[in-house]
Length: 103
Image (tube, rainbow, N blue to C red; front, side, top):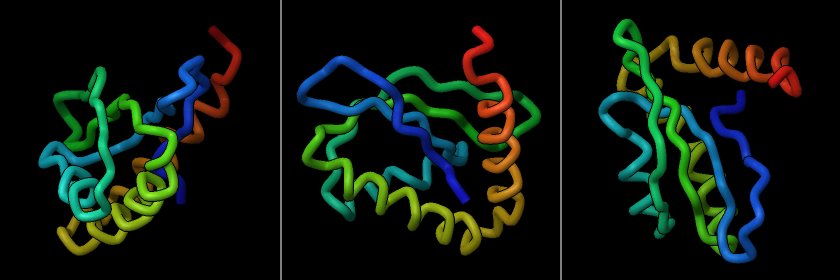
């Protein structure tokens, strides 16, 4: 199950990511725990969904820890009772894959 995408960028110091989080921002504590410095960008949500799509930048040296945090986020979502998180992520990633290159 994938809950993030590494985006193309031109920076030599950082990597852009898009990830899916809960409105309670459960990933933030994982970033702190794993010592990942994250610069947050735009955030997208719908009124009928507790989940958010968040754009961010991570220093290149922190990318492995960021991706590890994303793996831990899946487990944390289940622990907090968000059983539909996996399905939501799969649907978003499938939609993105289907529309890749359409714009």
